[in-house]
Amino acid sequence: MPPLRIALLQSSGHPGETAQNLKALDEAAGRAAAAGAGLLIAPELFLTGYAIGDGVRRLAEPADGPGGRAVARIAATHGLAVLYGYPERAGEAVDGGDAIFNSARLVGPDGAELANYRKTHLFGDFERASFTPGETPVVQAELGGVRLGVMICYDVEFPENVRAHALAGTDLLLVPTAQMHPFQFVAEALVPVRAFESQLYIAYVNRTGPEGDFDFVGLSCLAGPDGTVKTRAGHGEELAFGEVDPGLLAASRTANPYLADRRPELYSPLT
Image 1 (tube, rainbow, N blue to C red):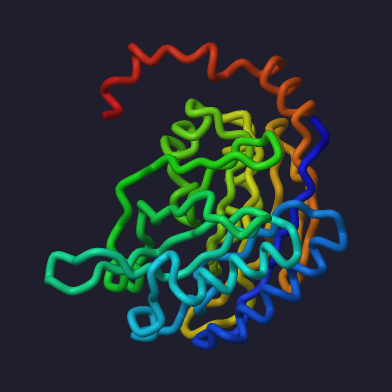
Image 2 (tube, rainbow, N blue to C red; image 1 turned 30 degrees about the vertical axis):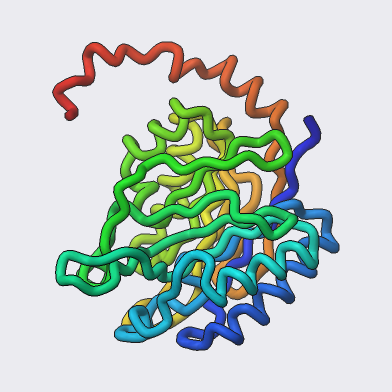
């Protein structure tokens, strides 16, 4: 199979302004498609912004709400898949109101939904106060012969999460994120190690710059199964490109048989 070209949209967009963020996503999708990308990945909560306080509940919407339908039109117009983060309103919370999830949704190049993932590991007081944790650790979809998996930010810092994707056959793990100072070592060191130890690609796509009480570090990257960083963004707004090569993936998995050499019978104390 030919490599899958992907675009990493490193941006914080316009916090609290969904219409402006959709406009920015449309512009980035046009640029990505013109550069031959088949997939555009936007950061965590890109549709609304991250540090927007009570705006999270006000701007949350169902997966197929107005924002979701707008992203579907963007994907279909430009003929590429789009993954974006957004606050999802769904069902009922324990207190009887709507549950709000920190979600990431993948739509295909025809605008059809391919996957919707709810963040399972919430980080910090803001997220725990604003969101309900998801309960499905492995969410996957197929694109151009590549099996995609989805998780969000803090989720990737748990090796069990990534290994679960590896065992389920994920080739490319999409991780929209909101990584802030002083944790830049996650983007610099941890993500490439996760890719190597579980023998898959990881696209880690961050917000950038100050937003509320946070200062996002950028440093979005595409890490390969050989442990090398194939693409690395800087600290500012950027549309970066990389390629997911099925040939490299197969060769690396042959040379580094971590999954085949596992001994699950020894690991029961972990759970």
